[in-house]
Image 1 (cartoon, rainbow, N blue to C red):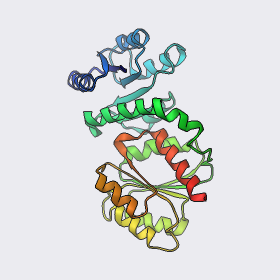
Image 2: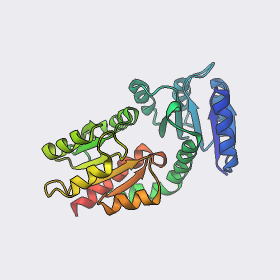
Image 3: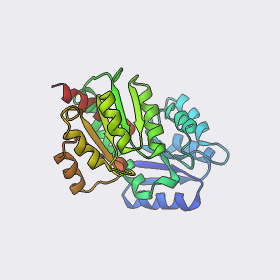
Image 4: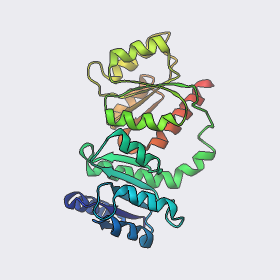
Length: 265
């Protein structure tokens, strides 16, 4: 049985997450105090920590710093749950190697559960992929266009991609995206579906119906996750259809590399 430690001082959210994870069959403990939470990491040695940042006695940053220098617990994965989606805070926690970052105002407990399930799938199933299935494609110099109107998500993926030395560009506007694609011809496009103005499906349709753009691979990344959505996207020519709630940043990078490798063949 997988063990989860929740370090969260919000009484309501802590209790909701505790009930949700316990009901799902995970051995779950809750700490409402940062210092208590850090001690539990050392004694419980959980398989995953859900960590708030603003905590009494020892904040989330201090926990991450202390955890990083303790070899007995440094490899335990962490998903940060915070009230803030400020770029400076996102950047800071990413430097500690957290697996994901969720803003409280932008998720529901079910999404946290999906992230948790996916994390355990990643640990069990993705490791072989790192050496076999995921190609060693360098993203350095690759032009990646991200079409997304969620500023928080854009900020966090931009920081993740910065380390790859790719040429990253972003827009939240469908018409502007089509103009950028026509003018700059990116190597790959990551495309949200629900956008103001023209939606992602219409953008994809126009890309694939234009002889100058149709060969550019497109990854659809959306909150929509019904089989009908996936089928529609793939039938229109999308290389991948990823559901935001079920993928981590590392998996998005792996999919980008995979699709770029496939497009070379």
